[in-house]
Length: 253
Image 1: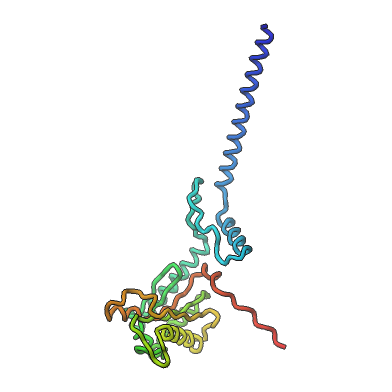
Image 2: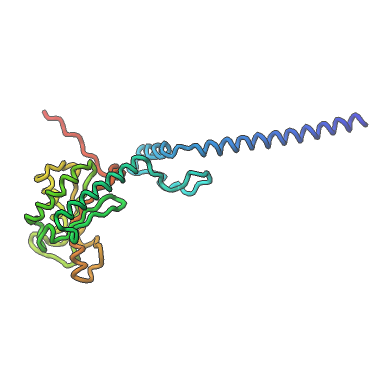
């Protein structure tokens, strides 16, 4: 009986040791996994996400918002890369140079250069470039565009020229609606940049928004005057992938 009791005691101790060893092993694995997660390279992860998105036919970045994380140092918000920081600094330098040109031309009250998420917006009120209801640049407008063009040429970024009007309807033989007028004004600025400043055409685009992107409500003449404008948008580098790529020139026979 004593021998059986001693064997039973040894068996119970062995089972306890096995359970304890299993627990220690699981804890070790847990801490190894947690350590591995803390060493995730966010930049490499985002590059992988972009590659997967393109492979599946997408043009943007998947997993843009990763959600909250339990691992310290990793959050769901987009992490700025050194390239993003450098791009912001370059854009701010361009904005400051544009502001200097605006001051030199005495246009601080009618021209602005502001920073937005999409890029730097150089905004001209209508009377700076055009006569009311016209899409023909004035001689003064050509001087102003010639003054800011060298600053715009310093950046390799795409530039979108946007035409805007107020909500007063126009119906002429040349401009049946505000759509045509706003688009014609944007195109006129693009053509001036190309022909006068030798601006690379592939970096430019013209867009007409008509009356449908007002800056302020069209409830007074002063507000309508603010909405009649042409915006030159220097797009941030991160939006380059959203722009259509130009095809290589076809070989000549």
